[in-house]
Structure formats: C-alpha cells, structure tokens
Length: 229
Image (spheres, rainbow, N blue to C red):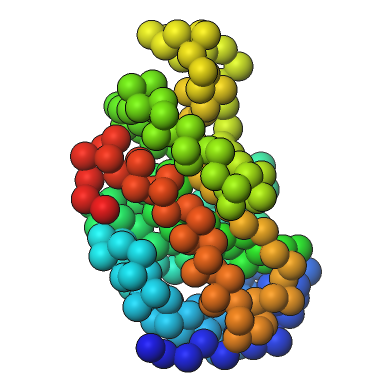
C-alpha cells in the first residue's frame, strides 16, 4: 500500500493566492506551481486511496489521471453564473461507481478548501427516474433505512444531508416515518475537518473512516439502482 505523506504546505497557499488573482494571466504564469502543489499531490492521494477503496467496494473507481479521472477540473462552468471568475479555489476528488459517467452517480467524495475539509459518500442531485427509485426503495425498506440514519457514527457527523423539497414528493405518503428523507433531492453523509488536517499523513486514515461511515448509504443507493456493491 502506497504511503501518503500529506498535502504540501503550498497546497492551500496556492488556492489563497488564486482567490486573490483569479484570472487567466496569473493562472498561466503559475501553471507549473499548480501542477507541483495541487495536481501531482492530488494524483498521489488518489493512488494511495485506491487499495483502501477496494477494501470498501471493488465497484468504485480511483483514477489518478488529472483529466478524465477522479480529480475534478479546476475550471469553473460560468455559463449560468453571475460569478465569472474562471477557476475554482478548492480541489475536489470523486471516486465514482463504475456504472456512473458523471458526478451525479453514487460516489465517495473529498473536498479540500482553505476554509475546511469534508469527505464521505452518497449521491448528489440524481436525475428524476433514479431519484424516484431511491425514494421508492426508502419507502419499501423503512427498517433498513432506519438502521442507516440511526447509526451512532452517522449521527455524530450530523446525519444524512441533502437539499429537500418543501412538500412531500408526489405519490408518497405524507405521514411516512421517513417523509423528511423522502423529500430529499440528494443523499450524503459527510465528515468535516479543519484544513490543516490535510497536511498530515494521518489525513488518509480519516478519509478512509469517513468513507466507511458512508458505506451503508452507498450500498443502499446501489441496491435502489440495482447496481453491484
């Protein structure tokens, strides 16, 4: 198993500098620094996570390539945003299910920002048909869902989260014991940590534990979508 030494000190310093100079000229002048301080360390982290992820599930992908792999691109999609700054000021890694082609498939996620870290698993804004299958599965497997949401390790990080509808979704009993979860449009369990933790070798152990905490949720979602886990 590869050894993770922690992210370099310049990792968050780069993003802080980028936040103050979020333009193409500065980024192009600092592209070598970006690769040395961000891209290469994130790729190494993904390589180190791969054997740990396989022990959780062999159906999630750890791909260290900087383009088309598990690392999110630094370029922002500004087409529908008032904020036209071109670059993200954080790093993100998603270990997607082998059946998923985009970030909306079930996965495990790591968010690395100067104002804090979070990591865990779940599914973010699945398309309507998949969302309804997850809701149906919750409604039909209330006891199994209760074991997930009531697990002490889940409760200690604030439980299952995700944006919700204001009203019960059409076709679901408003009195269902899990109606608040049936309203959700996303389902995830995340562990938070201060940014300096990412600079320590032990950070990879914390991420592994966060993924294990979210494992029952991802297994449940995989069952709802008839995917292997």
